[in-house]
Structure formats: structure tokens, C-alpha cells
Image (tube, rainbow, N blue to C red; front, side, top):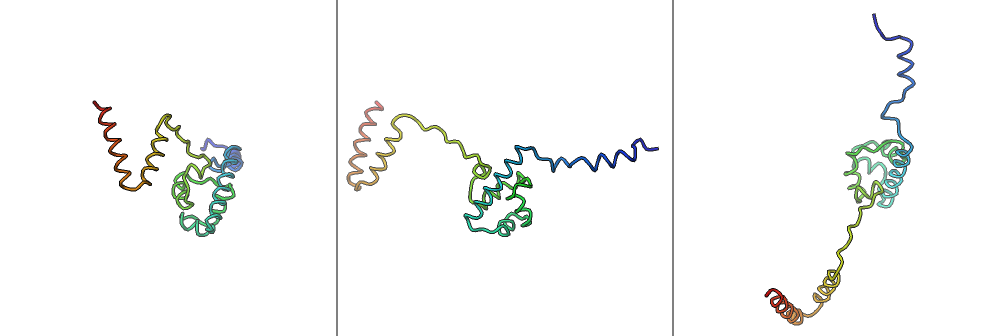
Length: 141
């Protein structure tokens, strides 16, 4: 004898959505924005949905759903998608990489001076390097 009630089980399973289909409001906004970024970048590169779908090994209809933000893009698909669109994963998902703060002090000035030095004729470059070598030798004492 079964412990399940035959009238309740079908009703419960038919009214509950699959967890894979449930998307929180914030998720919907994220996937809509992601889809817009994918579509905008694809169009900027003059790639069709069919071409992009073929590169990723998905159906064109799936690509249309990704771009519409109605279907979640699998995490495993992000690296090849970013590569196909010639952008970073961070840029694809809307998170630009954070820039590390630059060093304070003379480093940028030295970098500019080295660039200027590289533009000088070889003889002048050697003269500057001799002066620099002698100053560094004295500082090491």
C-alpha cells in the first residue's frame, strides 16, 4: 500500500516551478544586462547570432535567449564567450577590473626620463648612462 496520496502528488509537482527556472529579480536584471552586453559587443564585431552560437557550440535559439536575458549563461561558457567577443570576463559580466593604486614617488618621473633617453642619439645615451653608472657606484659605497 502506497503512503502517497494519489490526488495530492500530481497537483504539487505540476504547480511548483523547477528550481532551474526560478530566477530572482536581481538575477533577471543581471542576465538582461549581460544579454545586452553580449548583443552589443557581437554587433560591434559584426558577428551574427548564428556565427557566435557556432563558435560556442550552442544553438542559435539559445544564443537569442542569452541575449534576451531569459536564460542563464552557464559559468563554464563565460571564458569562451569572452574570448569570442574579444573582451575580459569582467567586462562581459559588467565588472571592470579594479586598477591597483600606482606607486607614489619618482617612479613615473623616472619612467618618463627613460622614455626620453631612448629618443636620444646613441652617443648621448651612452654619456647619460656613464653619469648614471658613476652616481650609482658612489651611492653603493
